[in-house]
Amino acid sequence: MAELVLSTVDQGVLTLTFNRPDTLNAWTDAMGRRYFDLLAEAEKDPAVRAVVVTGAGKGFCSGADFKTLDALRTGTYDERPDPRPHTFPTTIGKPIIAAVNGACAGLGMVHALVCDLVMTAEEAKWTTAFARRGLIAEYGLSWVLPRLVGQQRAMDLLLSGRVFTGQEAYELGLVNRAVPGEELVARARAYALELAAHSSPASMAVIKRQLWHDWEATLEESAQTAVREMLASFERPDFAEGVASFLERRAPDFPAL
Image 1 (cartoon, one colour):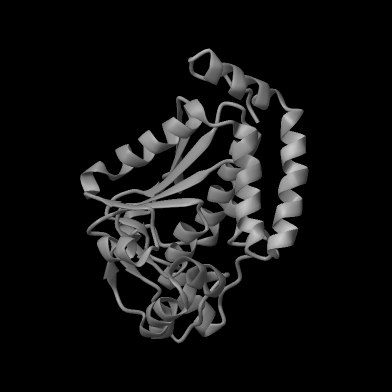
Image 2 (image 1 turned 135 degrees about the vertical axis):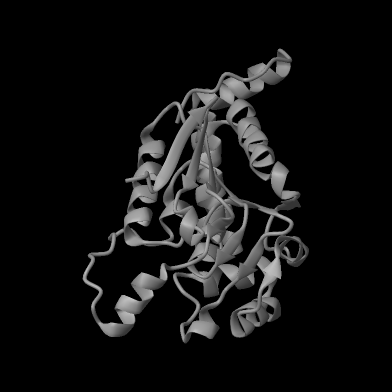
């Protein structure tokens, strides 16, 4: 049986590829379990400093597999779901970049947006889809989406379930970049390689935690946490190396996370 998620590491960048191209990489519990396992392994692997996630074929992830949805509809679904939440990627201490190469719908959209940065093919087709399937905004999307695009735009995308392009996703502020599809993965990898080469793994882990958690904090709480994190950063070798490499005009050699 083909690997449900392909995995390759090169120059500190792990590329994970959803690999159910015949279904536009529709999500199954088995594929999700493998994806989360690979992220958990990457968390512990000193060779991995950044992660790129994309899809095989013409889709990123077309949402929940319709065989799963039909089994839920008929009450015949009996597979035990992974206990890790769909927001699990936000807990990984390494930056994760979604490279949305094609269809990105429903649960697939959730998984694009719980990555830390999102790049998309200009022509990729996006949709929340939930309202058109009798479902609701799933797995934290009602929390993430308004913070990215604002309340009114989030309301539009969720209530209508309309299809929009990667270019519109960029114009809405939903993604970092929209690029021609043939350039997408190379551009995402180039960005990840830049992080791997020049950004402190410890700093990135703390910054990622700050950004995902500070949406729930007051300004005062965020500032107090930042002071504690800053004092801790002074004690790490990353700080000494970051300053020394700048003064010596050379590339940094940060320790692994």
